[in-house]
Length: 516
Image 1 (cartoon, one colour):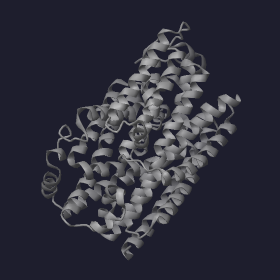
Image 2 (tube, rainbow, N blue to C red; image 1 turned 180 degrees about the vertical axis):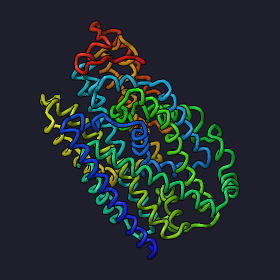
Image 3 (cartoon, rainbow, N blue to C red; image 1 turned 90 degrees about the horizontal axis):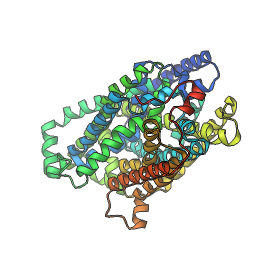
């Protein structure tokens, strides 16, 4: 690594730490003013304004893992990968315009999503739903550490083997655990805003700098030469197609914004209900940008290496991770050393903005919706805070382990979509069904949760074991949702004990579960 890169990395890291400490200190003061309550700890006192909500929603969903997998898609598929971003825009805009799920859920006053399951379907559904939700989410973040470590090492041009990657993984997770445990959701939100600004500036500046080195017309010509029509048209691309595109509207748009717990939790934190839909409508642009901008970096990397501008031999050393490493390696080689150092800090900030939210989300669900009900301590503030922090550490150890041993054959994005579907295939049914279908019952919810596990068939090793290599991931995903919906409807219609949609919620939180 060049001296300029080292100096820049040290200087920007110091500045980042100073600002982060100031932000955390301020968030701690605000948290103290809000009192030592579960509302303060889990949903940041439910006092977020519109623009703070937009920033924290954006930061949560624009992590280093997001940059890495979209850059990988851009490198492999060219401009046709941009359709994922437009799918995210469409899906999130639909949520913002209609308030689908997010409005009614905010109205209930719950602190976690499984808590809604308990209000609507019963305590056993709450516990089982929390287990499914946490399991899918924790499996989903299993590759965050490995990808972040590979990305940063390649960006800095550090010569290291597997030990270096593992060492950086440990270092990153220690920092993440320390500050995620510090102040609950309040500290997560406060740091998200700062990190969102830093990351957005870093990505845009990198694209502008790269286009000054490699003209856009040359990039287009290279994609046409290397990929042909498939590099521009997702319908013509054999790795995409209409079914995949429809799957992306659901996964990258509707699910990522309205069903995925780390995003939907932001709706629970917003002060005024009228701002919930506004926040999601504005954030739809961010949901597009989080896909398109990193994919653009990947497309530039494709042109960079195709035209002999990079060290192809160094790229080959990473074996099957070469397409994942291409973009950060290009950034480290094509940009000045001081800029590479700045980008490394920006990428670290992006890692933290997602890592803290995910660690806290799954840990809070374990504490509030599994440990709390099982021990009868759902209102014990100290107990739930303690279990949350213990869970954060436990999940961190899992991340290190899974990042080292998992060897799937799919792209990072496809792994995330499949692992996340373990929860959302049943989650979208339980949330939307419970809100919009008064006839939904406990039996239907339990069947939907169990059948949602069929989404596991989409994971690379599981597909191979079941002989489903010829079946695409979107087809498996849609089939899993169909099975979950089938179980939900049949189970509810055959259950004589009908639960009214507005009854349970009003008894606990003073509101009703409406449908608007």
